[in-house]
Length: 218
Image 1 (cartoon, one colour):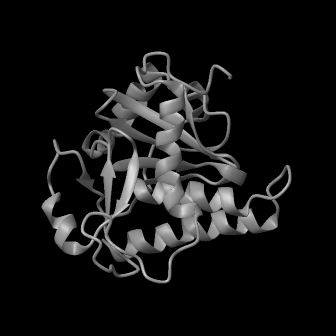
Image 2: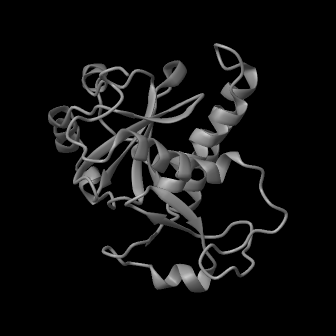
């Protein structure tokens, strides 16, 4: 294990944390069933259905509209409804030095406020799934001061997604399930040491889709 992989002040055992990340990711790497069902009441759900997020385990659940509405706007329940809004932060300010100070080993990551551990968590995608990285909170606080919109990021269910791969400079506020969808796509498509052509095309298409959604939701 490297110093970048876990935060020393996280009380969650390493094995449990890896299991939690795997639970969230599994929704996006397993074959999609012909008919999906609500994980709460077993009712059949539309292909584009809401998700619920369990902060304690970082587990995502499918939900029908009736079950999802029970958790809408609820901040202190076992499950929280994941929002759908995508915001492209065209004016986001981050220097190369600020990014390097966050100690992310690759040029892509997402950040969210975790209520169970009472701090900001940073995760980056890899061929093995989502990996948690040690986050310099002093550096994060500096980035928040430069970008006050981050103060409005909803705890647990909304994340800052950063893409600096191949000279990109993309910053989004997205639902947490979109972050795990990206991780799942990378895990499925990665081939060999460099990933292969397909995975990079998939990443490009993913961010192009986010940009289109952000424009349509204005």
